[in-house]
Image (cartoon, rainbow, N blue to C red; front, top):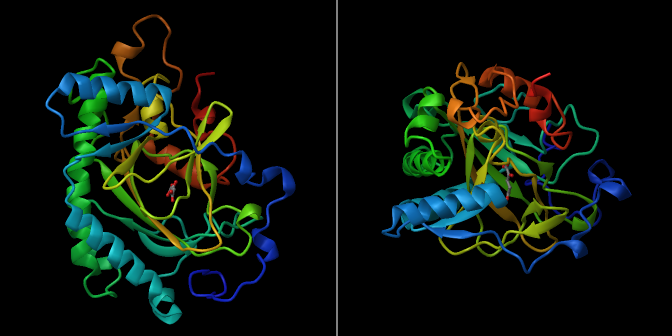
Amino acid sequence: MDAKIISSRIGFSNLPESYVRQESERPRLSEVSTCENIPVIDLGGEDRSQIIQQVGDACKNYGFFQVINHGVSLEAVAKMVAVGHEFFRLPVEEKLKVYSDDPTKTMRLSTSFNFNKEKVHNWRDFLRLHCYPLHKYVPEWPSNPPSFKQIVSNYCREVRELGCRLEELISESLGLKKEEIKNALGEQEQHMAVNYYPPCPEPELTYGLPAHTDPNLLTILFQDLGVEGLQVLKGDNWVAVHPHPNAFVINIGDQLQALSNGKYKSVWHRAIVNANQARMSVASFFCPSYHAVIRASKTLTDDGSGAIYRDFTYEEYYNKFWSRKLDQDHCLEHFKQQ
Ligand SMILES: O=C(O)CCC(=O)C(=O)O
């Protein structure tokens, strides 16, 4: 099994065959736009209506934005990043204690995306954790490094506050009451993926993560400052998201596209890898409760256009998402009204 984990293997001079994409699916790195960037929004500003306007514009035009002065302490982020790196540096025997290919597990180290369903793998290992409520899930988290549980719990708490604040801003930016999006989600789940992309011998032939949209409501991503890798599709072009100091990258997930009746888009994004440096990112996914019924707000369908998507539970959606390959068609297409 250890052969699957790439963070413990050293000395690749060529990319193993099972990671090589066919010519038409490769990232074509020379065509990626590096001069455009996604909006950076200062959440520390005094003028709330201006922030709401900026959030709304970013959600409509990009589906992605970065936030600064977001309220999550620098210390919480720095410790999270350090303990993440420490985890991936552990000896392989230690990491294998928490390895699983089963996507239904609430805590696991895994690799690629859905290893047993894919033909071609992705150059990524990841630690996936359910994080809310903490008292339910922390006991099953890794106990090595010894500080892991305490540091990651603290990070999750701080990031959850930011998530709630963003949901309010997004709700208001749609012309809805501050609490409306939050209320539509029931007792929200919070999941985390600590993604680790080791240096890759032939980065132009593969991905860390191929193009995908996120199945949840909203994602709050921290990416290593010194190592680029995240790219977002804008029109027909891939745009590199330059890491901004002390910023989080925020993206709209499929559930927000459904709740906003398509006004906000869950945008395709991907992670590319590089030959020289390992890259880590920490994604916090805010998800509706499994039993929440996802349905566009009446305020957004009253103009006569009607709801684009049929009603569904998040559980139904999540199961559909994990039963597929990551870079297939947009999963929401399967939930359109007939
Ligand atoms: O590593 C990144 O920048 C992207 C991560 C991501 O898209 C994900 O975890 O779903």
